[in-house]
Image (tube, rainbow, N blue to C red):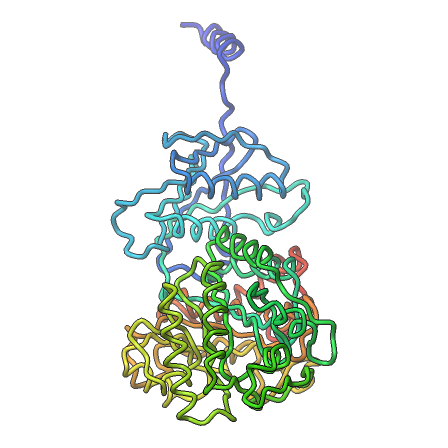
Length: 518
């Protein structure tokens, strides 16, 4: 057949039927992307995938995969202006992005594990649960250009993904952050902004420290003065504030959308001056305490001998349990210096029973082990390895928050303008270079649930201050919680973190510009 006639025939066919132009080859080196935390298994190939206006998203037929696909669609549209066709199907087509939920998937043991494959023809993110698919989505975002983090359209960006296969799962199931909203109060929008930042690094728990001497931050309808009076103060004499139950539900729902579980903390029997100022009957002498705006600890306690104390506690835990879909209520239990040991143990025994009564399990600082705990309890190690080990020997799981390594309120250097120093200085390398598995020598690794990074807010008054103390240290903690020890090194992490600074800037994160990142 004449070649010109063949070409003409193909042209006529394409005019009437439609022919998709062949996409150009894409070569993107993985070194151009910063994966944080680093995956467990990774292999690369030469050709990557180009997303353009002809690409189709296949969201699958299940609600969980559709929700993940929608988050991808929205983020890409916001940053690129591309409005991709989305099909609620599982067809494995070319020039396509697939979110596949397969509950019988082989080769992935963790519910948060996922498989991500990028070829010239398609991107496939596959997992056995919605949690795993969401974690894969976070990795896919990191494989895209940094501009994917922008809330406005960035022109002239090539939306290319490196050719890669990632088989990934977390080293630890608990990867948390804690925000103290009691010393200083932070708005719903602030907490949501924090959730947005945490989720990029596969953090799956947000522990909210809701009550302390300086403020009571959660509405309890059966005890309204807790917020009317106890919620009115803050460190330094600030105006305070609190979350209504509707606002708290909104935070819980927003976190759940980002696959983060909220763990509420009601700190008892110490750290309770805000409650003691609100209701005189909670004091042994029946006299209401003055509101407190300082930073000392260990001077307050609920009256253990009064029956009304347990009525109060029952009401508080009942209402908070109804607002919280997660399995755990954190009872605090630290620094109860003016509570006798006998009274402390009696109180915590009763408090734990109340938590169980409302279908939740107990979490608390390592100190609570002295009251006797069950193997369903989580203790949080912060300062005393021997006490934490005693809790583990009772069967409890352990979350690691060693203050010198994970307390985000510690200063980076002696010249850091905000923060504290009682646990030492915490530069970004020190926060990263330690092993969770080797911290508690007499506790089996099987009992180490994970790590959590607390931010206490005595010196923290706004969102910029939160971001400055949290980032980039929390990113390193996230890698300690997710990445297997054999895949971690300071040199690799430092290189990736340096490259990641552009994305932090695009997100307008007011992070600490460490000299180690120059």
